[in-house]
Length: 92
Image (cartoon, rainbow, N blue to C red):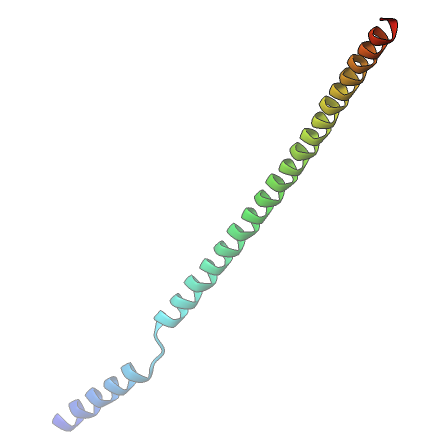
């Protein structure tokens, strides 16, 4: 009887140590899910960055156009003032 118990104990000990555990499967599944979430977050971040960059470029372009209009209006005003002074000087 003792021999049978020893054999059973040894058999269960060997079976417990040689069997696969669920930890590896759980770890790889968790790792895969984490990678998928990270990838999704990265893609969303890239999309937002791209959108923000495009809006910034559009605003910069609009600002450049408005500055050019203001500069042009100032140049026209300065030219009129200069011409007016020359006309007054010529009349004197």
